[in-house]
Length: 510
Image 1 (cartoon, rainbow, N blue to C red):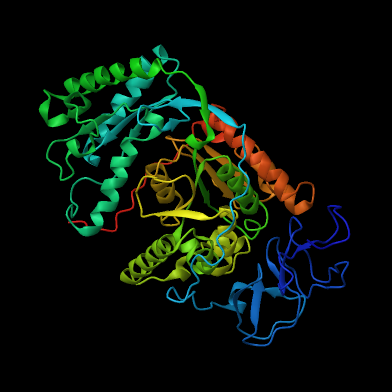
Image 2 (image 1 turned 90 degrees about the horizontal axis):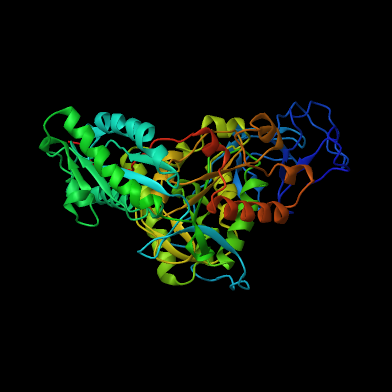
């Protein structure tokens, strides 16, 4: 960061790397034409907060560098002090997946971080819960209306009797029938639902509600294979019989869940998912690097950390493949990039479909710039495994869980992977939440944290103003995660905010 003072009125810009020839304007509200920085740079036009200013003169075709990497090429001549807009930048070619270095710079493991535990729930299968929830899964969307009414009654009539149970969660979705159930890619939504049904926060209590004629059989979601765990609506004598049966079986499980108590658990029991949504140009400067620092702390303490969002990794994958633990993991990472390239091609789309209009308004010009900021969440640890969409975690440490970048789809797939705490960074702001696991919101800008004071948990914008360091915010996030895993309610939980599950189904509908 450059500027002579941290006084609010002092014009400030943020330059991330010595090689950068652009910087972002840090001041709230942006800066006006004629503003002069202490280094002598003078703005040639008004530039909004988070948008890029040219630190040098560019000829057409010159590389534009941010984060020490080329984010594009000048479409025209750009003068020093001008606003470097999206329209000024030509998107570069993506990294060649067949020319990537693999496991050439595998990080040396940092010293273990000992003495940290959390107060959670131990499950019989060896997993750990951070919440104590009754989960009711569904095999087809047809049953959603009945289940909605049943859940309303369970929450009103039964849940108050069982104070150790946090909530009742219905796993509703738009899958199950009218789908090509045997298509190769149908494995993705099916295993996602199977893994969601056995989420650690459900404590091993499975209740499945199905219709009876759907393609995805209710039995396929019943991990225990217990007939008493199924409610197939076509087997019952009318609506009232359906509701009373669901409520009776729900109460049987509520009684058992209510006996569970929080106890000391190792941090190796945490599976922490990382995601960004409503990103802006500050994401890769403040919140994401701080989350990356916290991710390294979690890995050192034995936890599993998931980072995801294929399209927000693809253009920075050349910085990740050197960090894998071995060639097998490197090839798995490339495999997921290739699969998604083909997926986009089938839909006659490409990587330029990301970023969103809001991302661009926040200063992100293209997917390359966004990806370079996004991967900062992964910290600096070695990547130990790669998960295809919907698979459950198998290894502790830093794991790439392949998902689309869509907030809701990514969150659903990370839950299927076993995530029991979610960390979500945002610059533009989103009230995003999940019913199955707590979501810790980290703001990239202090202005957002102030505006949404009752929705944001941690203000990482203090890094941009110089009142806190990446390390300090990283430790704050690390401790907040432990407190959240131990039962502290996040802002989204306090308000009861959560988004619906959103399955990733690349297979055909019929």
